[in-house]
Image (cartoon, rainbow, N blue to C red):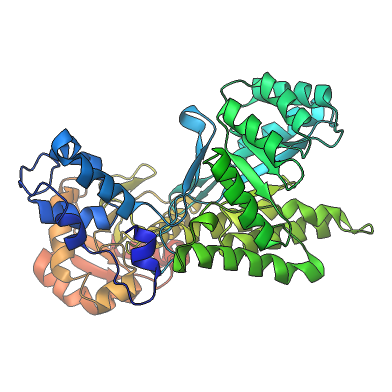
Length: 479
């Protein structure tokens, strides 16, 4: 029984470590790095380790059990790889429908479009903006992922020239977009063995598109706008024909069609994750650039705004890949931040490494502060310190990624932990004073910290934006 059946069908229990353990060699050999096979099975179920780490399982003796485990563990949504090398993008690979059930894998890939009727200057400019887009957010660098080349000319030669120019300029994975198989074939000849995503097979051209996908070993999009019955039928036909890596496009509509768009995405993902429908268990592609195709001339800023909110809705409604047109940072930022928030692991708070951080060029008289290792807390505090150009030491306490007030309430931030962190950091050898500024939300720990550490505690502000004012008013008089 596959995992999609185990996790999806009503009345059937979820996959447990025992299910995996029964199929393991159960030698407790520790070759995987775990203490025993049960510990290994638990990590396998939580997707923290691959079953291939079990060397005995890979022998001929256990070949049948290995195949069974692979079947049990395969995701409800197949993982599809677009591109080759280190820039290749993985899409799909989802295990569950809802994020609170389990973490999502493979964040939604965002592609920026280029057409074969753009000038060389415009093509290079759009590629440059796509590659240079970068935003630091709670310790992670947010970027764009792909380039989609659209044939608006329907001219095979023009498309081939455009594809070649893009491939010479960027190493980002590509999506080749045309409903004309001859156009896509021309584009593929310009980038052999690059494994782009082909867009798209329809009821009219599916056979020619399937031949191209098989000949060039490329993933293929199945396009059936607002017709899930046809989409499923085409998927079955293509699978029977031998094309295994598919991406589904039920159509992206705006205005009055927006409700149908979102409903279709939800129904497809529900069918795969909750009912184990393997014909719909493939990544979904959305096309927010349709916001630019609305009849009538709307201001450009309105089209950018519409595209941004449509992208956000599709990310929330299970899109695994998006094709967008706008390259302005202000409109791209909301979707990429939303994507980052959704694709963090809900089981593990986003945390930074604990330890001593140095800001500016502090000396033996500089202030010493502490905060928790919750990423959002740390980067907020760090940003306020850096913007104020403060020379200071900041001690990061391991609270398992929990913010100050919650960590104090949940006993993840205690006076004992602070005292231990002071000793372990070596800060006592870097400053001649013994004064520690603590967050205002941890004020209740001040007495205990002083008693256990021997340091004088100064209760700082509740908001890190007030640190500069606090230091100006309090530190100078205390130092």
